[in-house]
Length: 200
DNA sequence: TGCACGATGAAC
DNA sequence: TTCATCGTGCAC
Image 1 (tube, rainbow, N blue to C red):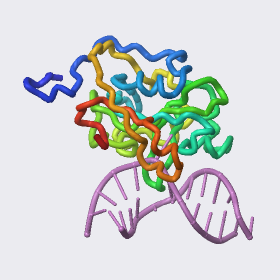
Image 2 (cartoon, rainbow, N blue to C red; image 1 turned 180 degrees about the vertical axis):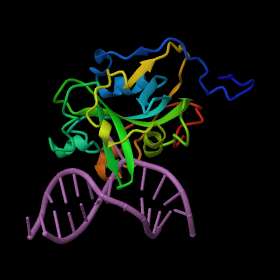
Image 3 (spheres, protein in one colour; image 1 turned 45 degrees about the vertical axis):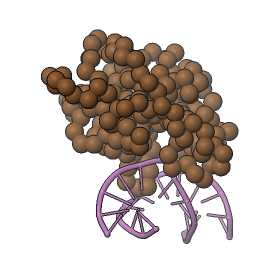
Image 4 (cartoon, rainbow, N blue to C red; image 1 turned 90 degrees about the horizontal axis):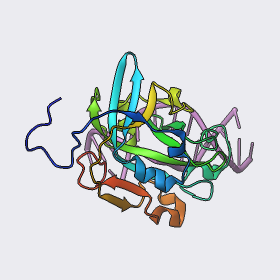
């Protein structure tokens, strides 16, 4: 993989030793996890292919009191994973045609999560990755991975040792206008200037 | 059992 | 602004 001379400065080049994020990484408040996930690598191995994307845009969902969060509906078959322990994937079908992937955060019962909204292609990623639906499509993520442990070998998030300074932009979350004042909270975070952010 | 509505993306 | 398309949650 060649860096490409004179490419946009917002693109990451460095890929060093991959260190899988430990359980304690996810066992923190959703905002802290959301911000810390920016720049980390989402890794999914399936059908003998390892696909890697660098996370550049996320949204935090704080729990049942957050009216924009699915867990605001309470404990249901669908939200069961959100109410479970941290470091697991909450994957659901939206609008009958796209999948969205979340990372469960905070201790069991808190039902907080971070939605992955966009990644920058790093390895074996074809197609667009700007937006939660396209991200899942390109990374071959679907409902079969709902509840999957993110400390597994085939599906996890890793720190590749990149120490690039990131300027993080805070914005309101997308598509949650039904949630009253929660829609105005600045709970969407993305890497400033990155070309793969869905809605800069 | 029926029905309204999405944490979306693409076309018009 | 409209629409594709279907699982989920809740009303009846």
